[in-house]
Image (cartoon, rainbow, N blue to C red; front, side, top):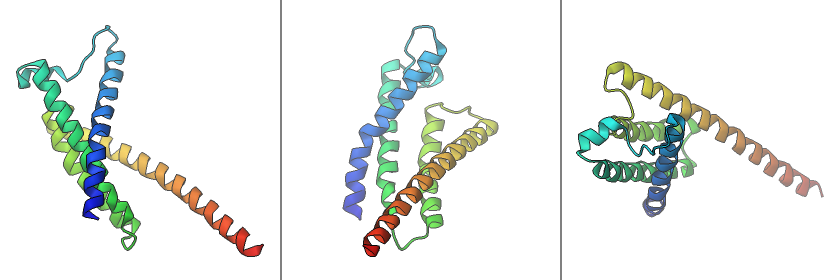
Length: 153
Protein backbone atom coordinates (compact mmCIF):
# COMPACT_ATOMS: atom_id res chain seq x y z
CA UNK A 1 0.00 0.00 0.00
CA UNK A 2 2.86 2.42 0.81
CA UNK A 3 4.52 1.74 -2.54
CA UNK A 4 1.23 2.33 -4.35
CA UNK A 5 0.75 5.63 -2.46
CA UNK A 6 4.29 6.73 -3.31
CA UNK A 7 3.86 5.93 -7.01
CA UNK A 8 0.50 7.70 -7.12
CA UNK A 9 2.00 10.67 -5.30
CA UNK A 10 4.79 10.99 -7.85
CA UNK A 11 2.28 10.78 -10.69
CA UNK A 12 0.05 13.34 -8.95
CA UNK A 13 2.69 16.10 -8.86
CA UNK A 14 2.42 17.07 -12.54
CA UNK A 15 -1.36 16.74 -12.28
CA UNK A 16 -1.47 19.32 -9.49
CA UNK A 17 0.78 21.65 -11.47
CA UNK A 18 -1.38 21.25 -14.59
CA UNK A 19 -4.63 21.92 -12.74
CA UNK A 20 -3.12 25.04 -11.16
CA UNK A 21 -1.95 26.29 -14.56
CA UNK A 22 -5.37 25.72 -16.13
CA UNK A 23 -7.03 27.62 -13.26
CA UNK A 24 -4.66 30.58 -13.70
CA UNK A 25 -5.38 30.64 -17.44
CA UNK A 26 -9.14 30.63 -16.80
CA UNK A 27 -8.80 33.36 -14.17
CA UNK A 28 -6.69 35.45 -16.58
CA UNK A 29 -9.35 35.04 -19.28
CA UNK A 30 -12.04 36.11 -16.81
CA UNK A 31 -10.09 39.28 -15.96
CA UNK A 32 -10.06 39.88 -19.70
CA UNK A 33 -7.34 42.50 -20.07
CA UNK A 34 -5.07 40.29 -22.22
CA UNK A 35 -2.51 39.69 -19.45
CA UNK A 36 -1.62 36.37 -17.84
CA UNK A 37 -1.96 36.40 -14.06
CA UNK A 38 0.22 33.53 -12.89
CA UNK A 39 -0.24 34.30 -9.19
CA UNK A 40 -2.35 36.45 -6.93
CA UNK A 41 -0.73 39.92 -6.83
CA UNK A 42 -0.56 39.89 -3.01
CA UNK A 43 1.42 36.66 -3.14
CA UNK A 44 3.79 38.06 -5.77
CA UNK A 45 4.45 40.99 -3.44
CA UNK A 46 5.00 38.68 -0.47
CA UNK A 47 7.33 36.39 -2.47
CA UNK A 48 9.43 39.34 -3.60
CA UNK A 49 9.17 38.70 -7.34
CA UNK A 50 6.83 37.17 -9.85
CA UNK A 51 9.23 34.35 -10.74
CA UNK A 52 9.72 33.40 -7.08
CA UNK A 53 5.94 33.45 -6.58
CA UNK A 54 5.43 31.20 -9.63
CA UNK A 55 8.11 28.76 -8.43
CA UNK A 56 6.60 28.52 -4.94
CA UNK A 57 3.06 28.22 -6.30
CA UNK A 58 4.13 25.53 -8.77
CA UNK A 59 5.84 23.48 -6.06
CA UNK A 60 2.88 23.80 -3.68
CA UNK A 61 0.36 22.95 -6.44
CA UNK A 62 2.44 19.87 -7.22
CA UNK A 63 2.50 19.01 -3.52
CA UNK A 64 -1.31 19.23 -3.37
CA UNK A 65 -1.57 17.00 -6.45
CA UNK A 66 0.86 14.52 -4.88
CA UNK A 67 -0.98 14.38 -1.57
CA UNK A 68 -4.39 13.98 -3.23
CA UNK A 69 -3.08 11.25 -5.51
CA UNK A 70 -1.24 9.41 -2.74
CA UNK A 71 -4.31 9.65 -0.51
CA UNK A 72 -6.40 8.01 -3.24
CA UNK A 73 -5.17 4.64 -1.90
CA UNK A 74 -7.80 5.20 0.80
CA UNK A 75 -10.45 4.27 -1.78
CA UNK A 76 -8.75 0.85 -2.15
CA UNK A 77 -9.28 0.01 1.54
CA UNK A 78 -12.07 -2.52 1.06
CA UNK A 79 -12.44 -3.21 4.78
CA UNK A 80 -13.27 0.47 5.46
CA UNK A 81 -16.78 1.86 5.10
CA UNK A 82 -17.37 4.48 2.43
CA UNK A 83 -18.08 6.97 5.23
CA UNK A 84 -14.67 6.30 6.81
CA UNK A 85 -12.90 6.48 3.44
CA UNK A 86 -14.67 9.73 2.58
CA UNK A 87 -14.03 11.31 5.97
CA UNK A 88 -10.33 10.46 6.02
CA UNK A 89 -9.81 11.53 2.41
CA UNK A 90 -11.66 14.79 3.06
CA UNK A 91 -9.58 15.46 6.18
CA UNK A 92 -6.32 14.87 4.30
CA UNK A 93 -7.51 17.04 1.39
CA UNK A 94 -8.61 19.88 3.67
CA UNK A 95 -5.48 19.72 5.85
CA UNK A 96 -3.42 20.01 2.66
CA UNK A 97 -5.48 22.58 0.74
CA UNK A 98 -6.29 25.06 3.48
CA UNK A 99 -2.72 26.07 4.48
CA UNK A 100 -1.52 26.06 0.86
CA UNK A 101 -4.46 28.25 -0.17
CA UNK A 102 -3.83 30.60 2.75
CA UNK A 103 -0.12 30.87 1.97
CA UNK A 104 -0.70 31.51 -1.74
CA UNK A 105 -3.38 34.12 -0.98
CA UNK A 106 -6.08 32.11 -2.73
CA UNK A 107 -8.33 33.11 0.13
CA UNK A 108 -8.87 36.32 2.02
CA UNK A 109 -6.77 36.43 5.18
CA UNK A 110 -9.65 36.80 7.61
CA UNK A 111 -11.98 34.48 9.51
CA UNK A 112 -14.72 35.17 6.96
CA UNK A 113 -12.32 34.46 4.09
CA UNK A 114 -11.15 31.20 5.62
CA UNK A 115 -14.70 30.06 6.39
CA UNK A 116 -15.99 30.98 2.93
CA UNK A 117 -13.05 29.24 1.21
CA UNK A 118 -13.64 26.14 3.34
CA UNK A 119 -17.35 26.15 2.46
CA UNK A 120 -16.55 26.41 -1.27
CA UNK A 121 -14.01 23.60 -0.84
CA UNK A 122 -16.64 21.49 0.95
CA UNK A 123 -19.26 22.08 -1.74
CA UNK A 124 -16.81 21.16 -4.51
CA UNK A 125 -15.79 18.03 -2.59
CA UNK A 126 -19.42 16.97 -2.11
CA UNK A 127 -20.30 17.57 -5.78
CA UNK A 128 -17.30 15.53 -6.94
CA UNK A 129 -18.06 12.81 -4.35
CA UNK A 130 -21.72 12.51 -5.42
CA UNK A 131 -20.74 12.48 -9.11
CA UNK A 132 -18.17 9.73 -8.57
CA UNK A 133 -20.58 7.76 -6.38
CA UNK A 134 -23.26 7.82 -9.07
CA UNK A 135 -20.77 6.83 -11.79
CA UNK A 136 -19.45 3.89 -9.77
CA UNK A 137 -22.96 2.84 -8.73
CA UNK A 138 -23.99 2.70 -12.39
CA UNK A 139 -20.85 0.71 -13.32
CA UNK A 140 -21.42 -1.77 -10.48
CA UNK A 141 -25.05 -2.26 -11.47
CA UNK A 142 -23.97 -2.92 -15.06
CA UNK A 143 -21.38 -5.46 -13.86
CA UNK A 144 -23.99 -7.16 -11.68
CA UNK A 145 -26.39 -7.35 -14.65
CA UNK A 146 -23.63 -8.92 -16.74
CA UNK A 147 -22.94 -11.48 -14.02
CA UNK A 148 -26.64 -12.30 -13.73
CA UNK A 149 -26.97 -12.65 -17.51
CA UNK A 150 -24.01 -15.03 -17.62
CA UNK A 151 -25.43 -17.10 -14.79
CA UNK A 152 -28.77 -17.44 -16.57
CA UNK A 153 -27.19 -18.56 -19.87
